[in-house]
Amino acid sequence: MTTKDNFSEQEWRLLLLASTHATTYIITADMSTVGAMREMKAMMHQDPSSDAQELVNSVTTDYQARTKKKQGLEPPKVEEGQEGEDGREPARQGLRQAAALLNEKCPPEEAAGFKQWLMTIAQEVAEADKEGSHFGIGGVRVTDKEKAALAEIESFLGL
Image 1 (cartoon, helix red, strand yellow):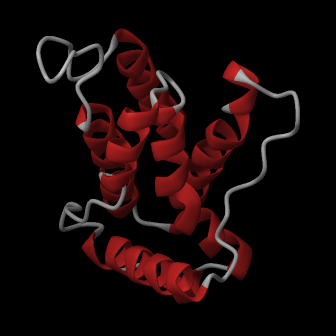
Image 2 (tube, rainbow, N blue to C red):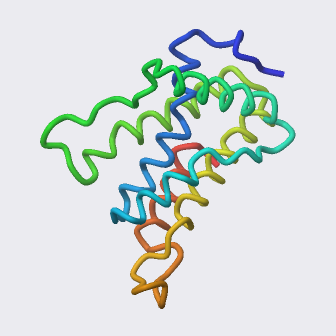
């Protein structure tokens, strides 16, 4: 079983930010203010496969503790003038790096379980708000742009 001790501080930070990157990538795929607030609430889902349970629990526990202490878990800043696809590049790179790190340091089942946990978070964020509805009537749970973003995340993670 892989633990925090298997990672350098920089590598661990990359895992801590992976769920933030997945969330950011979905939210920025099809942005709405109210939707973004609902989608952020869906961010820290804890229902990993049993293969990754211990690693996910360690990551989420440490993430929440650092967040409470405000210990610098802000994702990399988007440069001024970066918008759209360019503004999503830090999240894209963070997810790719996390996937490579998991493949390098974890047994295959555990890496796959952690990646699937990230996909579950992304899916829940995409489903957290009904886009295009008026007072709750009509709209869709996951937009075409969000579906495309989910497929991209799946590709970044190598699933």
